[in-house]
Image (cartoon, rainbow, N blue to C red; front, side, top):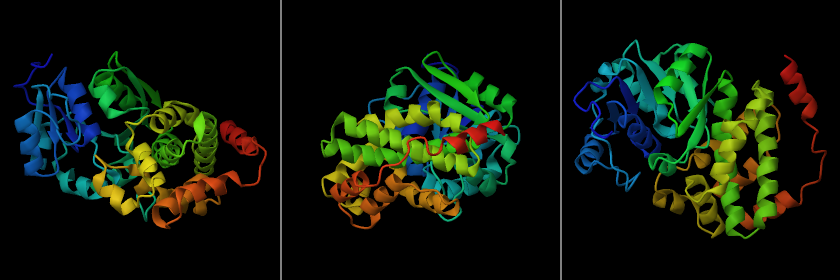
Length: 351
């Protein structure tokens, strides 16, 4: 399949050549031509020359149908689908740089997980705002998607969320594979919040693993973390059932349980006593949880929602509090009714 249509003009493009963007280029390039837009000419030239993203996705050869460029003007030919895969911290400036070159016929898909500091906007909202795109033109893809596994052809699932069901169906038809099973969901708000918030919990999970708190302790952290995520989601209008799906508990299991997760690795390094400033430069990619936690806490404060795990992740990252002290303080919290939030969730479902 590596030689499929390599001379044809790509009608699908990916903006962002990190691990996830490159993985999607590999997935698509096995069946049709695809354009991968890197952040600068040097990065594009290096990836193209090696036919491998040695920095972000080592050991995975790019199919011949993957075209690599740093020129935003090349997007004009991607008339069917443009996928945004830049890190959340750089998404707005990336969209502003390329927006005028995006074909008016192209569907738009965000695969970025995070919340924008200051605005507290979700990633589809950032893309719509920065690019001047109608929100109904945008979809979001999220789920348990560890890039290295998908690039190697291992089975995975994800959910495509869009206000327009036909848009979601088109993206599923274009990207879905037997080994990459896609579902649809109309709850864009919930799907995007799941993708952003689970990264914060993965930092805590990595710390729990490094400190040897055991499987019971980790299961408790993940379960209460899911309740924390759902509590905020319901407060802002998301469907609580979304948090029990692939974007919620599915992604939470993968990100909290795998050493392939950069957020999990960040937690393990914090638990060793290293500072965020030291860890940030050494990570092989972006740990989105560190860039999302303060925006998540600000959103929670706006809606009067308590997020104790996220607060302690913030404390460990930015306040100099030891991870051990953070976890001890979480364990010392007063017990509460496990179903205390159930009434609000049920009310949301009845709307």
